[in-house]
Length: 245
Image (cartoon, rainbow, N blue to C red; front, side):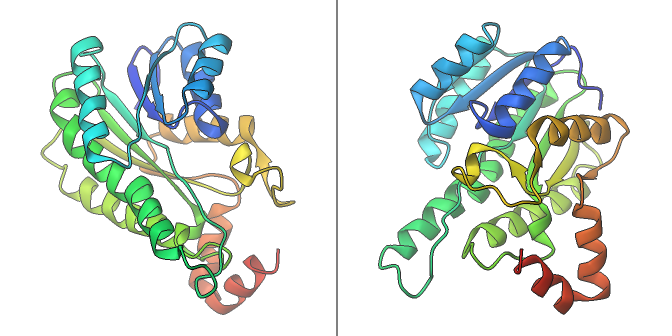
């Protein structure tokens, strides 16, 4: 997959990795569409990057996923790449939070069901255009869970599994199915408290693009490859080490 001269939709493209990715893809002569829940963030992104296009929507809602599909179909029918980037996280104790099930549902709908829905809704649009692709953003935590996240690890692990199955079932389809697994990245996602091992957003996005353009179907950014190897060779050590950081 060559990330140039495409029309690319990025969910959660108004901040963090999504915004940096939007910037880099615009520099590479792509038309970039983004969506997000917060209008002010979308407007700020537009001010920084005037050539992008945006739609405010909440992809955790099936109706908003359909609204997004219709907006793209009507206004940007040449869309050929979908990047499922949007995600949320809760740092909570499962037993102590009375609202924990509501938070679990929110993460499942945003981090897992939305990429599944959008992949299904957008497949006909992507198939109508050259060089179609779906890129799902996950994390090295699909191999070793971080215990401060009661649901995030599970939703991303499920998305990892779904992506593998989708790739297998796409052998007769022109759609290229790619997964990008990030380590900790220094973004607003960490709410001002990124771990010491977090890498800069610019580095994360640069390595993502390099891996995709080399033809990798699973792009393991930064130390994700090391975490994967440790999880295979010494899973208990990997679990203890990751959760001591």
